[in-house]
Length: 358
Ligand SMILES: NC(=O)c1ccc[n+]([C@@H]2O[C@H](COP(=O)([O-])OP(=O)(O)OC[C@H]3O[C@@H](n4cnc5c(N)ncnc54)[C@H](O)[C@@H]3O)[C@@H](O)[C@H]2O)c1
Image 1 (cartoon, rainbow, N blue to C red):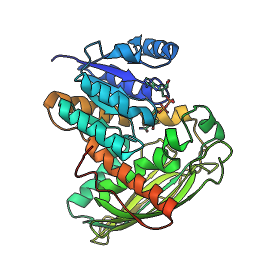
Image 2 (cartoon, rainbow, N blue to C red):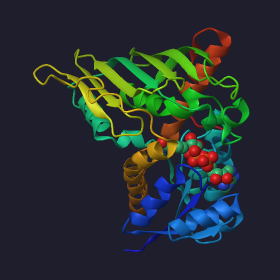
Image 3 (cartoon, rainbow, N blue to C red):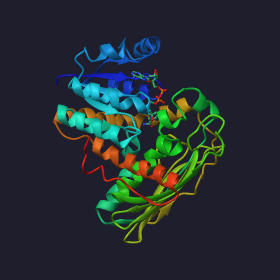
């Protein structure tokens, strides 16, 4: 079987999860890694046995697939350049910080005939797949009530370490955009299209370092009639991880808990008649906060599963598990959450997920 030639653009915190996955896949060769910081690209590429190159050089190397691991506001330009070179592209979350940007990315990839995938590796947790299957097979039925909590710790140094973090212009938002986007993606994957939100947010801890929110609460109404709540913060010390729970029309409830942050979630509630099972919250006690490198490292097995799905999709000529269009749905919810917090009123969720126009 011909080896797929893979590259990674952006050699920061999360890039190792991509490079190791491409390196370890049997039918894929990690060819090159690029960064605007040439020293960083060289050091990072050497670690994974690849060539360190500039962003201008990487598309001259005949790549088949590329991962985009650059800051959110740069995703659009890099993805569109990949599409222009006929390279299939797997972009880190969130797809972009604005819906116009996301729409242009989706349109460029569709016009060029390349696959666009977006990293939401938490969908690859077995616990998340089990909940999704219980919705599909009628065990839960259509979800009518959902809740997610994203109760994390970040040091202020997390925001000050990189200039792009914590501003509206370059980060696009705070805990909702960068951390809770994973849980918002899971909520909408379970509950279907969202139609209206109401949101309120505050900056309770990191205000000296950031202009965006570090704490938020919200409600979401879905096209199915289902309702959900979101609470999210990076102001906790120690952090308490994340949860997602849904109750279906059958009355049954299933929930998953990720603790500590980054670890594989477990089903902590399976309240299905005749199959009842639950685990004590924090049954093993509080373990304290992991470093960012440890959190990202413990996500790597699920990055590897999504990257294996993406390369298989390229080979098989099918859509990947999480497409660009699918990733637009969580961004549309985020856009409405920020609009609602600004207006002080409920706001509709833009329906851009269905009709991508530029
Ligand atoms: N899926 C996950 O769980 C997960 C985890 C962490 C980060 N992320 C996402 O990955 C992206 C990167 O996050 P990070 O924490 O690794 O950031 P980072 O700041 O640690 O690294 C970004 C790297 O990109 C480089 N860069 C910036 N602009 C570039 C450009 N135009 N071309 C090439 N290189 C460029 C920077 O020099 C830096 O080395 C973000 O969108 C973030 O949301 C996802």
